[in-house]
Length: 624
Image (tube, rainbow, N blue to C red; front, side, top):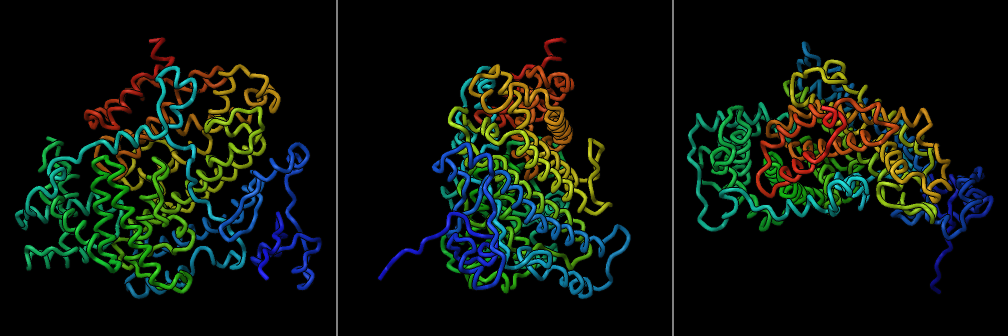
């Protein structure tokens, strides 16, 4: 006889930790059989009293394996604390790597370096020594429909009054309509044309690639590249994936040359290399039936090339293809990641797929490939080449903060937050935090900010970028500092949005029924959080100026973040309680406009950003 076993609304701690079904009794049958203490996590008392059971269920979360968990802000804080050891594990790995790599001393034996580091990193983060392997640790993935997109700021009533209405997918629509540049627009209109293989020119392009591009994503070693190049030179017209990788390297090296000049010619774009590379890659993608890590690498290089052009959708598409191939490779490991053996090149490929896709999800809310959930289960890469240690540390540190950024998106900007608002409260994406209340919002942001500082401290002293605007020696340090201030900004953004929206609405009866009229504007701690957000935005803008002045895989990302920071500063400047804390912004605004104008071709995202930023009038501009 078929029947459905009754499941408890909220399982006891013992059953949740052991992943057992709970009958909801006190004590439950499982605890009774095991002689265990049967303890239930109590639901927030204030919600239990003030809301009917139908509304109370919106604070519960159904997990993938059928369990029901409390999704209230208090419970989210608990879960953040429970996975804190994952961040600490990453810190240990960076420290371990650093202990074997200082500016003046490196291990003499690669084998010795590998064995020492391997002792610390063989296990996966989700089963580290600091965590009970049976402990339930929910993942913090970027939710679909999250409210962190820069375009969500354009939906604020005050911004709409100034700029007009912008749809949520405004920048997505711009990007999908842009034609491919130059030869790429006629990819299959003519036979494959092979570039001339002038060794001097090729070596110069490769050298430029390893100086300017490789540090951002060291997915293969220079020695691996030399073997592909030697085969290409020997065999010449060979349509293999190694040839495509070489051509992508030459294209990126040409695109990122330090010399100025014309930015719009096929030669400046390196299209004589990238067009045949893309044809080979797409052919292999369609007609190769076994997962290939080299094809994943070639696709990631193609993604990097499009990112350097400021084409986020084309970049995401290439990275998503790479992610799906990698997932096929994972499936071949029998779904058991705890015992699967991944080579170093595979780990680097995975983490590059993870970071590129998460960046695009955060910026454009694009469809997911399914690779993001593996971020809590795959071990981090290491290095057996002493010359690569610095790049590896930066590589690990960036992936670590990308995971932290995912937690921020999930904890503060998920669409489910707006679903728990009282019926009288407006629940737009920028007003959802009103339902949390001051104390719970302060608790969430304090925990996330603490984890951000833990990440920052985990970077070795000699590589850790100092806070502020002090000049830095390389782009990798600049990227980490920008990531830090980007995370700090979005952690504290809700406070400015709340204060700006509430003061603009003049404290309507609906809002004052939930929070006291002056709760936000008069709370010193709230004003302190707003000042932190203001400081983060301004510092980000000063640091981003140099990066948006040249091509890099972050060009589009940083341009969007600059626009978001300026929108936040404009809101603060036009909010009476925050106006005194906003520094003069006219000069910063002009600096950003000057750099973005360099890329603002007709009908591009950059042109749209320039148009939006130009219309923001700050108080110091009016005074001048």
